[in-house]
Length: 291
Image (cartoon, rainbow, N blue to C red; front, side, top):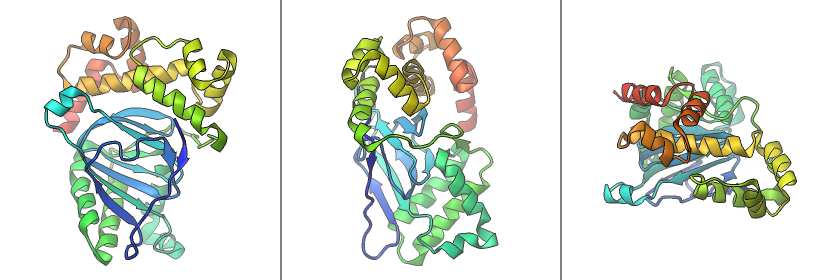
């Protein structure tokens, strides 16, 4: 996926950017920027890529992404979602961690905020219960004016810091090691994989997409992503399976094949390996956490 340094724009009377997106895939590319990004998905769902993490995002989710951490949200625009009347309503906040001055974060009272910024380099996903509390505050930031805007941002960051059920997304030690000259190749690999993950993508096929030899492709992909291409595809498939499990419209065996797996044993094994619980256990835990 094309890794781009994104320039975040803000108006002349605000110290940070706050906007509402009602069009899906506003920034549908693999990108990063020096600003920290805070996102509330009021409406819309799909797959999120944060660092080396692949997982579904759903209405009500709140995510904090640290400075220079690569990320990408691919919205699900399937016919079924359109028929259900699902639209996009996303509040997006971009801010430099030092916009309020370097001394501010050194205040002993603000230690919790500094800790949040450090953790956000791996991406932080809030629990559903915390998202219900934090989401409306993020919406208010978009429409607020004057110092009220900054006060609301502080309230949100404090709520994130106090959340006991937040989850770090990218793996420990993840770093942005994609080179500028490789961005077109990464873009081609990611886009092709996201579009075709349900079928068996051969090494020859994907290396042709990347315009390098099969042997070179294996070394290139693992050195940049810290995982094999097979692992990458499995994670995309499991991320898709998670969305289907949450939707709860198909039997688990149907979800297995709908996600690109050829047999249930393999699906069950890799799901537990990646998510730490069985498909049924994942489904039950989501229902419990949503209450």
